[in-house]
Amino acid sequence: MVRFLYNLLFPVVLLFMLPGFLIRMLRRGNYRHKFGQRFAIYSLRTRARLQKFRGECLWVHAVSVGEVLIALKFIRVVQQQAGLPIVLSTTTSTGFALASKHRSDSVEVIYHPVDFWWSVRRAMQLIRPRALVMVEAEVWPNLVAEAKALGAPAVIINARLSPRSERRYRLIRPISALIFAQLDRVFVQDPSDLERLEGIGMPAAALECTGSIKFDYRQEPAVDAGKQQAWLTAMGVPPIQPVLLAASTHAGEERLMAEIFQRLRRQFPDLFLVLVPRHAERGAAIEAEIASLGFRINRVGRGKGPHPADILIADTTGELRGWIEVADLVFIGKSLLGSGGQNPAEAVVAGKPVLFGPHMENFAAFVALLKGFHGCTQAESAAELEAALTHLLTHPEECTQQVERATRALKPHQGATRRTWEELAPLLNPAA
Image (cartoon, rainbow, N blue to C red; front, top):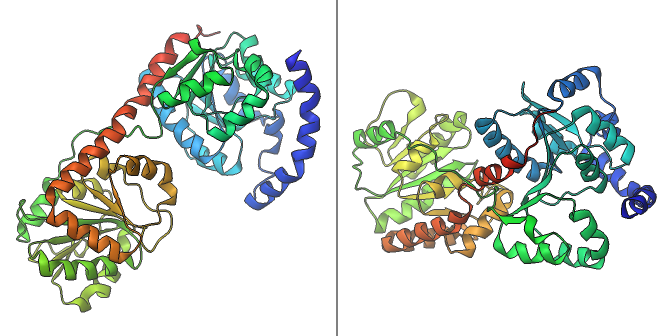
């Protein structure tokens, strides 16, 4: 009865929401791209690919860019552990564009069909997945019902529930509880989500906390930083000398960091600065820009080898992790003068004290997690950054404590992706 009412009302609700959808699609552009897929109408090539995966794959659904990034992490683990083919569906054109970059012989990307029973059934009958995996909170009644009709378990991974969403679901709890009852498992990010999700009707037996996939930054094998340390040693910088690394910097930040470094050297004469620009081809321009400050400058990309200097411009590609390993303090670029910031995760996982400016919008959730544990330093201006660096250089014990706090912040989430897969794997039905 609930599904009957849903299918009766869904077209009406969709009609009222259509103007907003159309405006967003026009703003994002590319709205006609593969439009038929939104109604499970596929090209011959796509249909052939989906039929090839039929009965063997997981169907992973991720709404937009943020969810797609989580889905891609999960997919990597699934394919490492089980080698299963994947159908990855997404709703937005931006999510589709990102997902398409990861299309391969074992990953097909489609637009998610609108949740009309007939379009979802057509897609589900074509794909016949071994399981339906939804990322975070995207639960469509017809999609779940059609998966269950084929005997495929339906699960949510990386689930969370904001207070706002909780209030909305509580208003329709008698209905939402019947829909959620069809879910086989719900893997949540944090223990605090368990009670909220149970409160809106998700069965307690299906809930399990596995940690946040978003914050699951696995410690990669140790990086051999011998090359980077050799450069520093040849320049007269022994391992005991403090190194400030400005990582993935953008235009203007190198000059700003060099000016801060110039003032810091009055109090910390042994301090050494390494600049790693986000775009290595800017190395020569950076050298010209900071030359007037009077420092001796060495540049890796110049190709003349190491020589004594005060500042090193590491304008090479793919060596950032090595420079992080030899650093004592790490500033994350594109955060003072740029917009959005660069990813601080590598430096945090490497056990380095991390600092950045006010513009970390692209990593807001990760920064909020670190700040909640006082595991990072965010400066609102260049002056604040200089003061923070002075404090950390004067109080090295603060560096150690910050690293320990950052480690505690990440600990509950380390291995979350693998744990989620290990809990999901036993639910898979034999291939059809």
